[in-house]
Amino acid sequence: MLYGRDAEQARIAALLDDARDHGRSGALLLRGEAGIGKTALLEWAAGRCGHDRVLRVTGYEAERVLAFGALHQLLWPVRDRLDALPGARADALRAALGLADGGHGDRFGVGLGLLTLLADLAEDGPVLCLLDDVQWLDAASADALLFAVRRLAAEGVVVLAAARDEGLLGSGLPEMPLGRLETCDAVRVLEGRGLPADAVQRVLEEAAGNPLALLEFGAAGPTAPGTLPVPERVLASFGAQIARLPDRTPGRPRRGRCRSPSACSPPSAPRSRGCRIAPASCC
Image 1 (cartoon, rainbow, N blue to C red):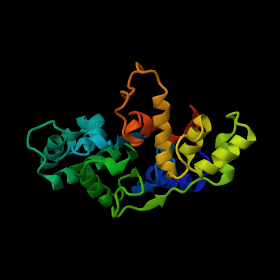
Image 2 (cartoon, helix red, strand yellow):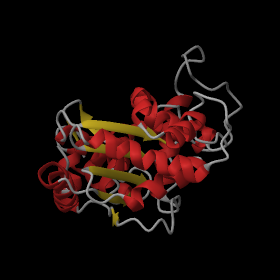
Image 3 (tube, rainbow, N blue to C red):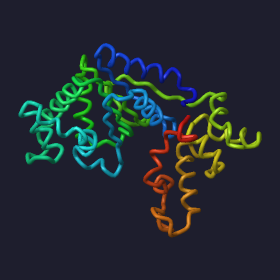
Image 4 (cartoon, rainbow, N blue to C red):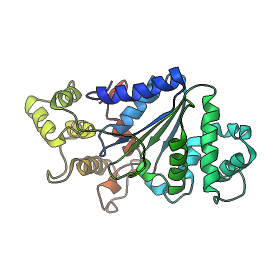
């Protein structure tokens, strides 16, 4: 369950319905600050697709230097379909995925091969591609994906991408900015958390409508100075929670080595941006 995202869900649903009912392709870039709920919308779209084919990729800052690393993540589950592609396009994709020699020189061939592969997959039914944290995709993968997405038309392929405000600027893709939640929806996010009225008011003021901030501040209280922007305060909240863990906790950074709020975030922190209240609901 999502709160305050009716218009966004309706727009995504229209793309999915067009792909299923009319074979139309479409793309949409969700843009917004950290914790605003982009991942939650991607997950909602995946759930709405039912048994349709869903391909996923999540950008990781540490892998931005690995050429075609993100494309490898996206296409590895369907690598067996490369044999159905025309020779040169299949060869370009195999090289990009590390399945054959040839290096990464044929960027055009990789983009064309990706477009052909997506169209081929869609012959079996609608295809949904979910691209999360695209601001951290390696340049080679981003170029290939944008090349293919701009040329999709009547294949039944839907591409939903999510980026922070500074990511993938000038992509040419239709965009949908995600704003902060209205007060009524923010209150619904906090319901059932057992907070007294004065604490609810404080969290509402501190979180300023950011879904993940509402959950983090509601659970632990604001732990960063109020002068910091909300996204940085969310990251600082994760860092404060890590600092309270015992030294022997698996995955906990060693003391004295954390130099910034973002560096304190555990590897799983970005996936928490779905703003989950409980396994079956999220904001």
